[in-house]
Figure 1 (cartoon, rainbow, N blue to C red):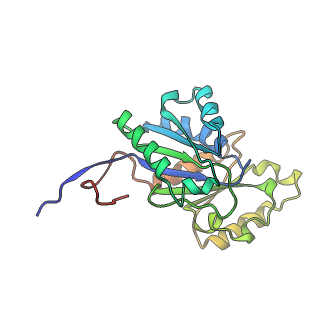
Figure 2: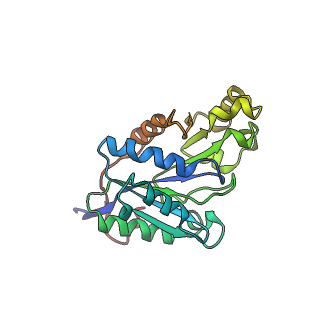
Figure 3: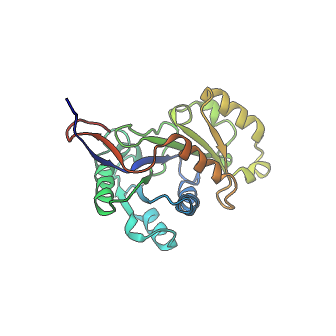
Amino acid sequence: MTVSTEVVGAARVGVGGPVGSGKTALVERLIPLLRGEGIDLAVITNDLVTKEDAERLRRSRLIDPERVLAVEAGACPHTVIREDPTLNIEAAERLDAQFPGLELILIESGGDNLASTFSLDLVDYWMFVIDVAGGDDIPRKRGPGIIQSDLLVINKVDLAPHVGVDLDRMVAEAREVRGGRPVVLTNCRTGDGVDGVVRAIRDAVPLGRQTGKSAGSGSR
């Protein structure tokens, strides 16, 4: 028997991490690089009770402002990306409906702690962003965001000598606790290393309109 299929929508990539780690700065750097590779994309941002990150992206003009949606969590940031991601799923479906050629949606979480993770009902792939100013002991704390993310991004590497961080040790410990999962070093202020994040996405995420079983199958 032939199983009917339908278009499910664009691939979804989550961007999580603590407050101030550089999530929005990373998204700002990713947008032109991904668009430069011909990828049709949109962005969803999450904040507690504001739309500040979405407004920042809209003002940047890096992407059509209509391609940026904001979700207000109204509670702990991880609630709407893990426990009940309904609001983010609805936002992604709105973008899919509005832009039929959409291939990729970046979903930026609100700032959270090291325990923050993404529901796989929401995303196909997710990265966790930390920064060296938070201390080189972060990998040793082995939070779920560090251990379970598909990609760990260590940002603000230029600050290491100014905050007394042994960057080589931090990277080695991150790779050890992640058991071989990839780690990328970035300086989002200058854009250094962000191409490595793009490569990781391209290597791991099937881009283009995704297909799945007919409605109600729970394919995501």
